[in-house]
Image 1 (cartoon, rainbow, N blue to C red):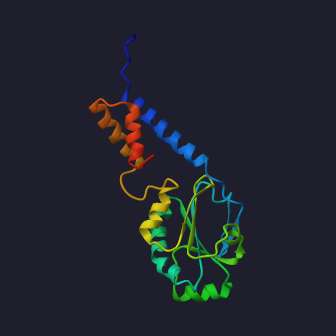
Image 2 (image 1 turned 60 degrees about the vertical axis):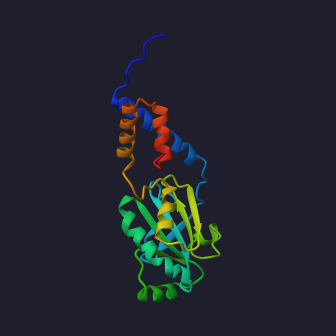
Image 3 (image 1 turned 30 degrees about the horizontal axis):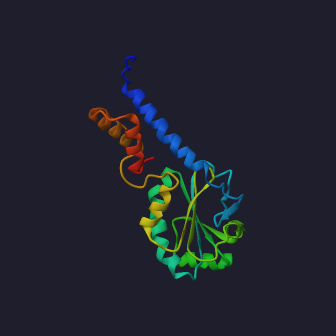
Length: 204
């Protein structure tokens, strides 16, 4: 039997990354592409599937009369402040109310996210939002990564964001990968076991 050549640390890290990224890509490929949409915010900024490609997009369907939407509003604001710098775009899609009604509400209760009126988008019809709040998460490849019905607070929204690969807590994936590979090398475990441990820990 030929002797096995020792692998360099860089080769081990590259192989582990390929395993993890490959597994993640396979999962994303099974997601449905978001339907073709258009949206214009109250400030006049326009968005489409194409313009948001490469961004994480969280849609919140809401209404001014919805007390559960109002209860979740601080959680949505917190998500905007925490992850906007990581490429997260949050659009609050008002459903079934006039633009003047929405503007009046916002004067008394301003929001951190961008707001879209019913008349300026086709999103509510596309996602059949009939109960509020209703959340839809679109990943960086323009695919629907997950949904959430009802107000569940900030922690639930953070968990939803992880479905699109946004790490909302803990170490960054690269440092976590290096730490796991280092432990595996020291303990004599295989690269496959290391990659599985990494995925099981929630980073893959």
